[in-house]
Image (cartoon, rainbow over all chains, first blue to last red; front, side):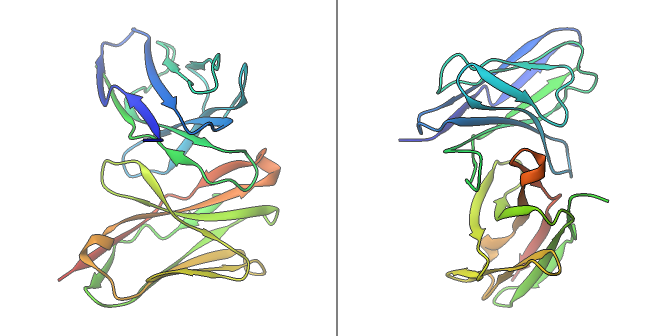
Length: 113
Length: 111
């Protein structure tokens, strides 16, 4: 089955710890994205990557880091510098970045206490 | 002003009725448009792309009005399973071809 997987589904961490969220796709898509969604709000773009070994900051990149060493993988690290890390994190991919639909993984709910 | 705005609702719809709602966008350079559906605590799923001539997919019809800068979604013969939040999504060329999401319109279909 082709698709996007994210793991884990739920993640709990103590304040001050870095945590890495996994995102893998087997759709052979070039572009991948990370979004954050807070309760009752829309999606906000954290980082995106149009090609392997290249990525750009989105609207709310502070406190986050990413890597794109392989086409199918785009892990997101939530660092201790992120002031309000508790949120629903969604990874997406698309065949390109112009007029292409994005397809989402099931998301990871991160709770930091 | 937000780049993409939606009425948050909820729109309470009797089963079998028709419901329609709009989404406005502020950047006239916007070049592609989508409707996504998001169920509670789930990921968004693509419902349909919106083409300049308007398009229909079963009970769903999407329209684009570039002059007034809005897109619309109409759902005919509403089913209970249509209850969800509908996200309007715009690709704004000036923003680096990234997708910008509206806050969503919540639709509740009731028996």
